[in-house]
Length: 290
Image (cartoon, rainbow, N blue to C red; front, top):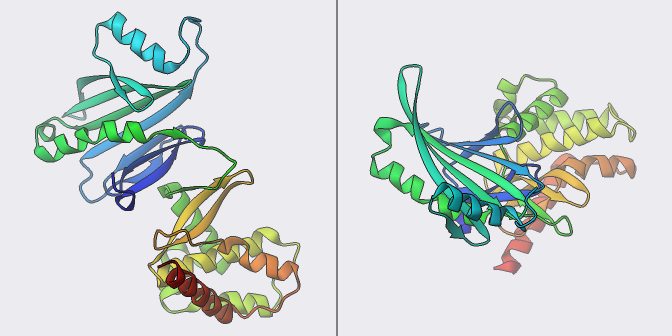
C-alpha cells in the first residue's frame, strides 16, 4: 500500500497502529476501545477494530500467534499467515431493522494481542466488485499492524473525536460557536482575536491551558488557510499531542505550545509576523529537502 495513499491510526491502547486506505475516516465507538472505519461518501462498508492484550493459560503456546494456529486446527479452519500475524476468518448473516447484513470476522493473533477486525455491509452489496476489492485489502491491513515504541516519535492520523476536540477548544477560546469556526478563519478573525487577547494580556503565563488553546486555534487557522498543513497526532515518551505536518514531509510544527512558550518567556508576540516567519522557514526547509 502506497504510504501517500494510506492513513495510520492508533488502535487498542494506542500502543499499536494500523495502516488503511485514505478513503476511510475513523471514530471511536462508545466503549472507546473499538475503532470504527467508514467512508462518509458511500457509507456502505464499516470496519471495526478492537484489541485485547491477553495472558495465555496454555503454557504450550508462546504467543497469540501460536494460539490462533492451534485454534484453527481444533476448529478445522484454514489459518492464514501475514507477516508476523496469524488469523482465521469466518462470516455470518444477520438482520438489523429489516435489512440483511453480512459481517466478515478476522480473528488475529499478534504477539500477546488478540485483535478482531469485522467488516460489515448490506447483503446486496456483498457481491459487488467494489466490496470484493475492499475485502481483498484486509490482509494488507492486518500485515500493517505493529506495536509502537515510545523511544521515537510516532505520527497518526486524527480520528473524528480528535477533530471534534480541536474544534471545541478553538471555538471556546475564541468565544464563538463551533459552527462559526470556518467562517471565522475565512474572514481572518482568528488572528485578530488572538492578537487582541495577547495585547490585552487576557491570559498570563500561568494560564497554560488557555494559552495552549490559543495555540490550537492558531494551528487550526493554519490548516484551514494552507491546505498543505494537516493535523496529526504525535505520540512519544512525553505523551500524546497534536501537531501539524506539512505536505506529508518530515516537516512538523507544534502550534499548541507556540504561543504559551513565548508568553512564558515574556516575549511580545505579533501573531501575523509569527505566521509569516513560520511559513518562510517551512518553505526554505522544503526547498532544501527537494
